[in-house]
Structures are given as C-alpha cells and as structure tokens.
Image 1 (tube, one colour):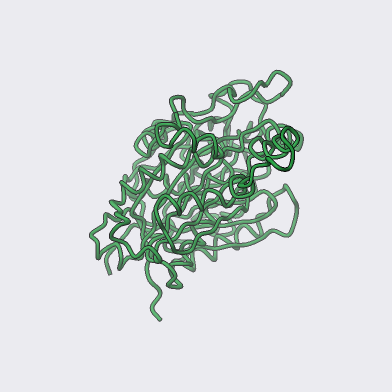
Image 2 (spheres, helix red, strand yellow):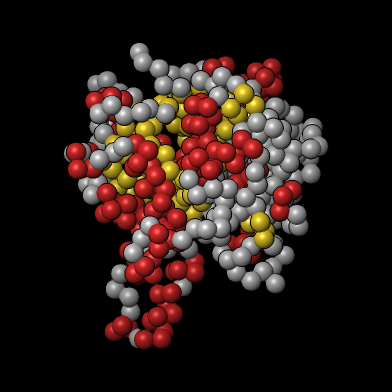
Length: 413
C-alpha cells in the first residue's frame, strides 16, 4: 500500500505576541517578547513574578456563547479563535467533507483551578447537586470533544499529554492516523492555560523557572547567563490533509509534514538526556526520507534552562557531526513566547512552517554571552533571510518523552 503524503493546509494561533497567525509571525521576526508581569493571580508571595500570558485584548465571549465560556476551561476558550482562523485559512467546508474521514487530535493539560471547582461545588451543595458533566468538562480530552462537536468531525478523536512534547506528539499521531488511512483531514490543536499558582510554585521549587526580574531579558536560550524557562500559555491549530485530498479540493499547501520520531529517556524525571534525544531526531529524519545533512534549519526546543540547552546542543552535534552542526541555523521561539508546555510543539511548528514559506528564520533573542557548551549558530537577536527547504522541529518533554518532526517545502513529484 502506498503511504499517503500529508500536507499542511490551515493555521491558527493565539499567543502572547499576537492573537492570530499574522501577528505571531510579525512578532517573531521582529524579536518581540510576549513576557510580562503575571496578572492572572496575585504573586505577592511568589518569587516568580513574570510569565508569557496571552496578549491583552483576548475576550472568549467574542468566539463562544457566554454560557459556554462559564462551562469550559481556559485552554478550550483559547482554542476557539485559533480553530476559526485555521478553518478559514484552509477554506475547509465541513458540509462538503466525509465527516467520518475528518479527525481531531489535541494536546492540553488539566487546569488545577478548573479541576478544583468540582470538589468545591460538591462541598457546598452536596452530592445530589454535583456537576454531572464534571469529568467531561475538566478532563484533558475535553478540547478534542469540543472541536469534534463544533466541526461535526466523526473520525478519530483523541488527545495527547506528554507534557512539553505534547504538541509535536499530537501532530505525529495525526500523521500516523492519516498514513494508516483512518482520515483524510486531521485538525490538530495544542492549547495550554496551565499558567496557575500551583504550576508556577512547583516549577519554581525544582529550579526550572528563571527569577530574572526584567521580563524583556528573562528568557535567553543558549546564552551563558540563562537561568530557567518562562512559563507561558498559548493555543495553536494546524490542519493536515492527505495530499490527494488537498489537491482534489484545490487547497493551498503551506508545507509537507514528512516525518515524526519518538524516544523516551528512561533516565530522570527532570533532567534531559542527549543520547536519547538524538534517537527521536534520527528517526524523524529517516521517516521523512532524508539524511541529517539535508536539514536546513532546526526549530529548537530551546527552553533557556542550563541542562536543556546544553543537552540539545550536544544531541544536535551527535546527529550531524561538528562541521554540519556549526553550519546549521538553530533558533528558539521560546525566547519570545515563553514555554507554553502542551501547546509549544504546535505553536512552534506553525513558526517552522512559516519559516519555510517566508524565507525568514526567526531569531533567538537575548543571546548576548556565548556559552562554551552551546557554541552553534542560534540566529542571535536578528531574523535572517534564508532558503529553507527541510526543517527539524524538536520537542523534549519533562520526564523524558521526546518527539521530533520534519517539515518540508512542498514540491510536486
């Protein structure tokens, strides 16, 4: 059986530097930081005062019925405008689709604040007046269900939660659904609004978050003086189609999702491990029918933590060898967007797809002091024009779950 090629036909985004894809891209190539003082909760007793919150002006009631806003997690609310933008971008008319061949895969994380509402209501009103839909409204599958119901998609419907690798993982899962013939179209969402007191407190205790007081300088991937990542929130949607389906309906093709690869560190709950990160990278490239020397650009995981950035640099050298590694441009969108955990892989894949289309590589901002352990070309501080045909997108999850993707410039063959 011939394995179908899978292409990207729709994009949607809600991020700390813009509420749509155009604003996201303009912010990335101009080096705009979306990191600012936390406004979601009182940080008086928290040593962490900054995060990458969604840009001001986001109003979920513009995209959802107010009653539905009251009944959904913030991650679902953030995904609604991204979904509308992606469907419009793809010119996807669900009334003309075989709905059993349209599926949904999402990546999101349970929001502790929303989860706490169930026990609070139970304690206040008693078991006879508990929320009967609490499980379906608060679980990590709720976004996939909402998107499926809104679009009427009757195909595969599931979710992924592999923490920081989740967004890429969801795209890889969708790729395989399509290659196996289960769907002609997959709507893939990464949406995360877990920027909450409990997550900030926990990440601070393990030393993962920066305490840099200046929001504009806080996130500095690969720089010698990096001191931790900045927590963020975001939502992104990518619509994938088999090439045959996209061509049949005359869809605009942004890029080809050509390969995916996975690995698990089996090493440590917090520390990364280059030896297994490189396995996912190698598998993704081979799965795309390429060799490491074919990669023109790497969209890095690049969290701005001491361990991650050194480990990723080492893994890239293991993948490519010293000479090719030093010649390959690498950049981290997290320097501007912060780390939106389960949404990061989708948002950064959108940036990777646009890099191919626009011929511009977004910079890694705040790169000022080279680190001897991180001595590659991180496209420091200024966007760079370049012809980019084959991109590797790295996503490495806290706990050791790794997923890498390869995007290609679409070429008829």
